[in-house]
Amino acid sequence: MADRLPAALGPLLRAARERLAIAAIDDPALDSRLIVEHFSGTTRIQAIAEPGQEVGSAALSAIEAALRRRVAGEPVHRILGYREFYGLRLSLSPETLEPRPDTETLVDAVLPFARATADRLGECRILDLGTGTGAIALALLSAVPAATATGVDISLGALAVAAGNARALGLGERFKALHSNWFEKVSGHYHVIASNPPYIPSRDIGNLQDEVRDFDPHRALDGGADGLGPYRVIAAEAAEFLQAQGKVAVEIGHTQKNEVTGIFAAAGYVLTGSHRDLAGNDRVLVFER
Image (cartoon, rainbow, N blue to C red; front, side, top):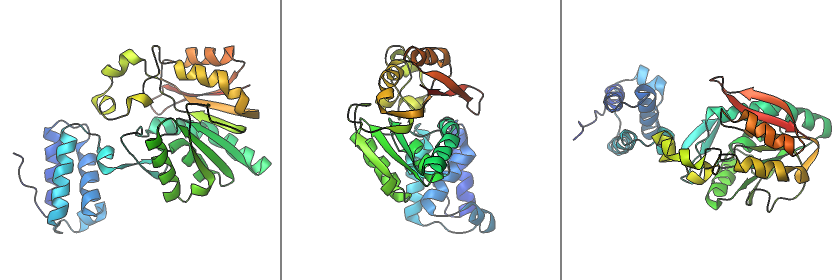
């Protein structure tokens, strides 16, 4: 049985950190702080300036429950119910991938083109395939006020989260959630077609980190036998919906650059940009017809 958590904020933070450290959680200091601040409604400044501040019993119970979930392996942002992405707070659900910093590379890759298109034409239409939380589309909308976006997903639960995130961020009028299996229900033409598709080979799902394998939806991870199935669909069908001089941008697994480039080249595309993530891995490819 775990020791009872102290009610004073400073000792509470220390006890929470020790609890996670003993459980060999990767970053116990950060995760304990996120949990305590979220469920107690306090800030880091308060913890420094008022370490003796009392935390109420309801908050302590919530913190205790959250620490138990974290010790059991649940990712901290799943416990909090949100994650920051490109400066935006995005709600999560069991039907959405947890957006990760690697995917911000995709936003960075297409943002200059989206801005230039909006400046030139007064608009930029974006299609986000497999939108999940809406992360890619909403990050672009937040940075390009003249842009509009359609977020496509096969999961109705994910679309509900994406639409809710758009409303919460004041972007609801420029974001449309579309229930579709890839391009099946898509219409119109877009200046940017972006996707972070499933790209893990089916046989490798079981070898993923526990926090990914056990908590991210497998449908959003599994790219088929070789992990490349979704790229074949996008390469084969995107041209029908791509505006002249438009761009297709996809996130990839770090070993997939050559294969994905070949798939798009066979469909008549030219690679115009290759971008690495913060760890230096190939992460995003940008194509034009």
